[in-house]
Image: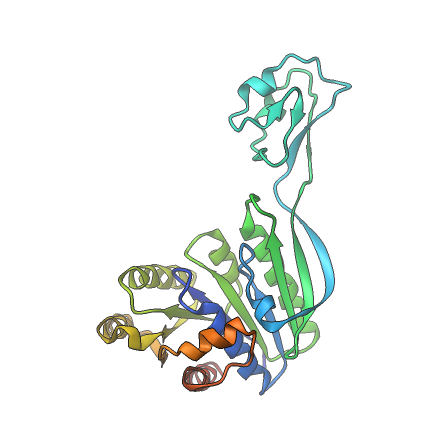
Amino acid sequence: MSLKRITVISGKGGTGKTTIAAMLAYLASLEGRVVISDADVDAPNLPILLKVERIETKPYYGMQKARIDRNRCTECGLCEEMCSFDAIKELEVDLKKCEGCRLCYEICPANAIELIDAQAGELYISNTFMGKIVHGLLFPGEENSGKLVTEVKEISQKIAESEECDYLITDGPPGIGCPVIASLNGTDVAVVVAEPTLSAISDFERVVELARRMNIEVKALVNKSTINPELTLKIKEFCGEEEIEVIGEIPYDKSITEQISALQFPFKGNAAEKIEESWNRLKNGID
């Protein structure tokens, strides 16, 4: 069987996306070889749930930042005066405030500004009882998480190919921004998790549009479907109009929250059984 690449996304946080992704990865591991990637590098929760054993750590470098060469600097003060981020004080650059905009580099009359690589996070390869997981963590206050997500996806793809895996399951970040776009690159199927709340429905529709603009097949999954049956029906009607397959409706199950709090995985109970039914529909649709 060729590699099947599945990315689980949602238009907003709190829909249960990571819970769904973890269970899909577990169910996939019962049938073949799996590599997992956690593309939510701002808040990576999947490694916590899976109690990973880290085997490799790599530094992640984001945008280049400025540094002043004091041997060349004439102390004219122009860089400090023009910096919009107040990152330069007394001819020293505060790397936490520097946004890498390059203005000081361009305007320095003495060419005393150089651009340096600055570590903005870390990337990890870890083991789980299901297989390897690739995940990353962006340091607080750092930006350009889309680039780190891209590195996470590229490494997980290489591992999946080298180990001849059957599935690559990605837990994507919430929203529709750059990190989500990066997580969807190279994906065969996007499983979009929705919950029956007014704000979530709006966000669900937006992320579906994003995936379709990227020419990615979309499957829908309604989580916590029993908390508002009327809005669940509205989600299903939207999917019917857009010809999107709803692979499952997962009822609200308080025991899942309790199992997450206790780091008990794989999950058990009514919701877990419905997720398994959803997985069977999903795999049958992509095999």
